[in-house]
Amino acid sequence: MKLPFTLSLYLSRYFLFYLLAVMSIFFVLIFFIDSIELLRKISGKNLPIKVIFEMVVLKLPLLLQQIMPFVVLVASSLTFSNFARKSELVVIRAAGVSGLEFLLPVAISAFIFGLLVVILVNPLSSVMIARHKLLEDKYIERKNTNNSSNFEISDSGIWVKQKEIFNKGNIDEDELEKSNDIILHAKYMVKQNLGEKEVIYFTKVMVLVFNPQSEFLYRLDSEVAYLEGSDFRIPNPIITLDNGITKKKPEIFLYTNLLTKDIQEGFPEPEAISFWSLPRYIEKISTSGFSAIAHNLTFHKIFSSPVLYFAMCLIGAVFSLRSARFFNLGFGVAITILVGFVIYFASNLVFSLGLSGTLPTIVAAWVPVLITFLISLFLIIHYEEA
Image 1: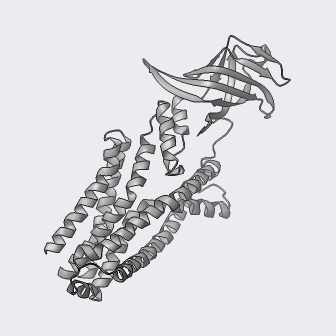
Image 2 (image 1 turned 90 degrees about the horizontal axis):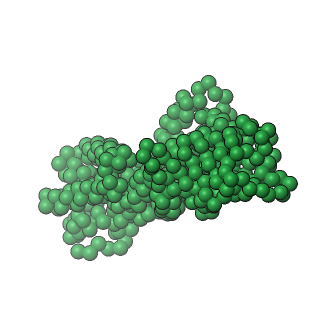
């Protein structure tokens, strides 16, 4: 018998009600747990209450996304436990509706909910977590921006802001060993390994030099530049002084504390990049010769999440229905939660293996989802036969 549309809406509505209820409970729990963790981290630091509250709120969407498969699992279990308790499923089965037919509307609702999370929540979460990172660096890490590098990739190329010291080939001899701020822009960047050395090549380079008081001193333009160790070599630069006079030098060396690992760590964290922008960042990072494993894994994990929600919904339903038949509803919910923890930790283990490079990216991101999906199908078939 084909499931009536009205009945499909009824089942989906109940599931969405429990989904929002469970999500709200977890929202409150995460808020208090993250608040306690943040207060522990800032012990001894005098942070305004407004900043603490803002940091906790900014991190909530990301944390909710991370536990959302578990939320879907619990919501599905509660939904079908409630149906079983009120004997509604007995009536539905008596009308000739198979188990798969009355499970599908709820599972499809979970899938659509997953799509909405990817389309709407993830872009908002990426903006909020980027803001959270800025506040964390400012108030908790208390990074000294005078000694650190700010690194950014944009459509126009690579931007770097940091401290530097001229050590030879200077503009003026009296500037020797003088510390200045620089802003570097390059169109492209490529890392190459030459034996035991790592060399980073920059093309279409522009360097703006400022004194410690942030006053403009001069600009360097060159077709190429090389970063090897702590030496930043700019061959044949065109130098434009603050009075507009230009001149050339055969070569300029800048001493810099910008290292290869600093550039790698300077890439935005995957969580701070929208799902829609991740492919562009992955391409830029990969073509630059740096590792994009974390960004690639995050992209596939987000992309596969609606399928995971679908599978978790089916697993939660089947466990609740079988427990309602042979044991009790409370036991079914407890088993569902236990299964959720097993899937969660197993997925995190595989994800960690992917991050370390032990497993290919596609395998680490998709295998846990596909295995969960196949398990859900097996359970449905077994439930129908029973």
